[in-house]
Image (cartoon, rainbow, N blue to C red):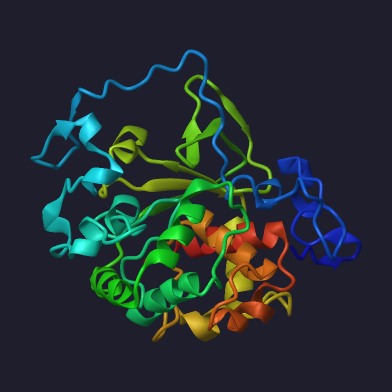
Length: 335
């Protein structure tokens, strides 16, 4: 892995070491025990052990979500059954690969990305992304050109296997479906000095009940607006992203001007409103946790697909603080 050094500090590490407990190796290589989780633990999430007093959910409980006429047993919400379609009027009819998967290794897209494509912090929001972009990303997976910097994080590693197993025809069907759906406001950004204490479970931040608060440091803490609904895979329940005070303004400067040469203005390729241009993806209103992982993986060369070289100059000199500021700003925008 490439850890760039600027002024004696590892570009993706030392800046936030006090906040994240990160120790960065020298340029040209990374010690064997250090992976992306040690650099951006709030984005490359590794689940904590379950508390000793944690109660397992009753799998026979009949559950429902607000605004839905459906109800089902909790045990029916599983990958083998495909996504729970709580709000069938909120999206077009799902094709087979989206609702059931297809063939060896290709599971239902909508189980993780949700039927309306809004996605969650541990995966991509696909709704409204360009058809050609989605098709190209799946081709990159098949060609081994899109990888994750943290193979121990379940969802990105799972997506690598799914992408590698997918066919071009399946990619085009899924891309046509998700690109046809309008991406809706999904992330509420809150600038703050203090955040609820969280633990990592289900590959996301979950608030520790009675855990109090702690300094946010140099990170983003993205949590469900309603954990119960998120656990039931309700595609009408979004997220709140806590970011450091001033991060949105600092990110706006980097994104819109390049920050006096630190990066390249994102608006050149992604559009003045960051809603994408042609095959270039939209950034506005997307998960900051997901976006941070992509910036890191692009900088470290884990994403090396057909269009990845266009991002080289943009990500080359980014620090952790830059990434936090950029994703805080992009998440704050209207999709």
